[in-house]
Image (tube, rainbow, N blue to C red; front, top):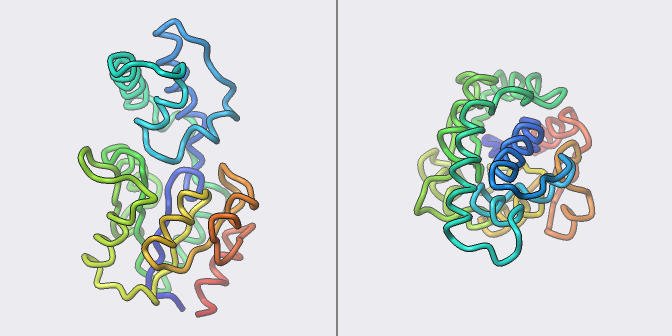
Length: 216
C-alpha cells in the first residue's frame, strides 16, 4: 500500500465548477463583458485564478483589467465558494478508508491557499493531513515546488507516494516531481488528456483508486 497520497482539489476531491463559473461570470458581467456557459470553465480552470482570469478576458487585455477582474472574482468567490461545491460521489468514503488505513493524505492545488484550506477542512476535517494551496510569489503546478515541499515536510519517499488529479496539469506535475500518477475521470478533463500527459493509471471511480493505493 502507498503510504502517501497527494490529491489535486478542484475536479478531483470537490466539484467546484459551478461556484468557480459563477465567480468568473460575476466578474465579467460587472465589467460589461460576455459571460460563458459553465461547461466552458472546465477548460479555464486548473492553472490558478490569475490564469483563469486571463482565459476568460478578451485577448490582449491589459494588467489593469486583469487586476479589476481578479478583485471582482475574489469578492464573489469569498462569499459563495460553498454555495454549490460538494465532494464527488464516493470521495468521503475514500478519504475515510485512507485515514483508517493510516495513509497520509495531502492536497496540492493551484487554488488560492485561503480558499483551499477552508473547503478541505469543511468537507474532510482533519482526515486530510496537510493542504498546500497557491500563495503569491510561489510557482503554480505543473511546477513541482509544492510537491517537493510536501515531500520534505512529510518525510515521504517518492516511491511511496501516489499523485492523483483530473487534468493534464496534474499529470505533468507528478511527472515533474518523479511521482507515480493516477488520473481520475469524474472531474473536469477527458481520458485522452490524462494519457497524453503521462498518467500511469486511469480511475473511473474512487473505489478503483483505492484499489491502486492498496496494490502497492
